[in-house]
Length: 341
Ligand code: KG4
Ligand code: ZN
Image 1 (cartoon, rainbow, N blue to C red):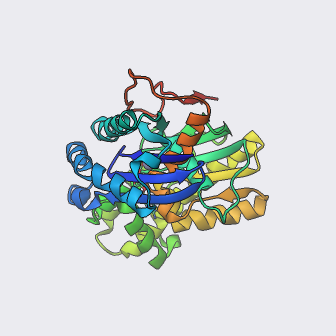
Image 2 (cartoon, protein in one colour):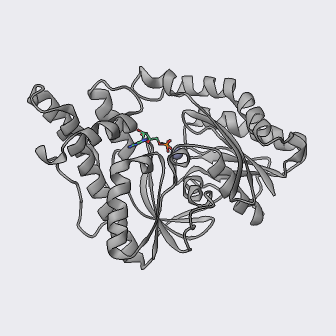
Image 3 (cartoon, rainbow, N blue to C red):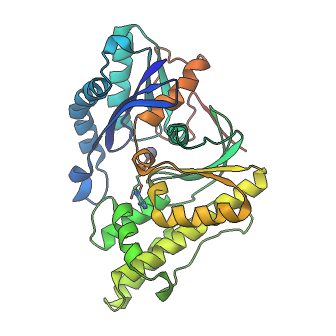
């Protein structure tokens, strides 16, 4: 079963061909970071326009990279939501027209479920066993989910304000480092000493699984303006990263413990963070939990993860009807079960 995946929910236009939900035949990503860099964040209207320009070349590139023609495809899987509506519509419209023209089924994939399926795409890594806990941590989302099967997400807790990636991006903007902030701050943090400054960790209620990052963001902003350049930026970056990682790791393992699971997946753009990887691996080792984190090329938005999740939609017969539409929020009623637990 060869599925063409299409992703356009934010600022990456991506196309991929994946076999049987696990084998990447090709994966192409056109990033718009250069376009949004000077604005310090994604400009929705610019994103939509660039998706329109990039979608055809990306699909053609994905087919060419695995020596396939459109006629060799068995189905199309596309991100239906959540995301920027104008951006989503470009991929969604393209995917549906493409599937209609080829007379093959089209499935609409929940973006977060796509991220979770990124841990099934690397043959050298043992995939998680259901049920497992997933921490989805990106620019738009920070949430903990119980994943009982391939198509169900049960929400355990989520951020009450900023997503972790958003906090990275906002701090980077204040420091004049441009967008996206995660990779730059991650690299700066590696050069610094985290213990020189202490930023507050918002654990909210001790037993809860919700997150909050806006207080941390304000604390760093205040520190930057009051410090007047006395503390090195690398030390500030390291202290900020330590605070983010501390909260993410402790809540994720608390969720694993509460659910009685043996497997934890950490996915999304922020899963590429080296500090997070290191601390999560140490904690997993100590607790005897199997940790699953994708390689960096599968952490950020890509279409291979969409095709991987799409395979399961197809198996379950969840094919898009003619009246289907995109949706913008994670908990909007989509075709996958995202429910509160
Ligand atoms: O998953 P993704 O590509 O898009 C969303 O669905 O949001 O995640 C992008 C986010 C951005 O906020 C970016 O700053 C962050 O992931 N990010 C990182 C790192 N690489 C990307 N954050 C921390 N450390 C990184 N190495
Ligand atoms: Zn994403």
